[in-house]
Image (cartoon, rainbow, N blue to C red; front, side, top):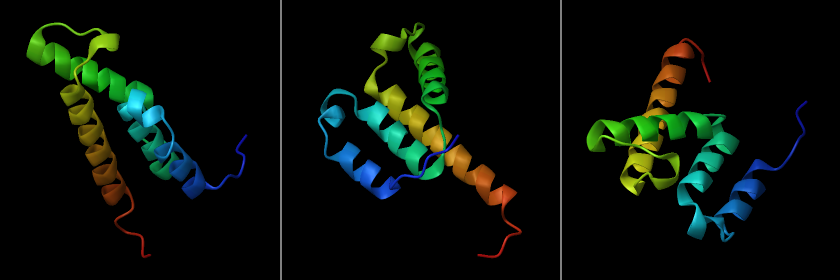
Length: 93
């Protein structure tokens, strides 16, 4: 089931909440989900953990340095954009 809601207001409310102070990457992922539908929190977490393990040799979900969250979010968001460009390149807007 899908319920209609004001996406712009949801993003605005999130951006002006205290959540950003405590969980900035969760907020950014949530904004992307609201605006674009992807990437999911699970996909970003999985990528961040993998990147962290590749560089440091270990990875615990609760202790991933910010740089790996940033890398994962940018990497997955870019991949999503490129996939959509290929998927819908034949469409006229």
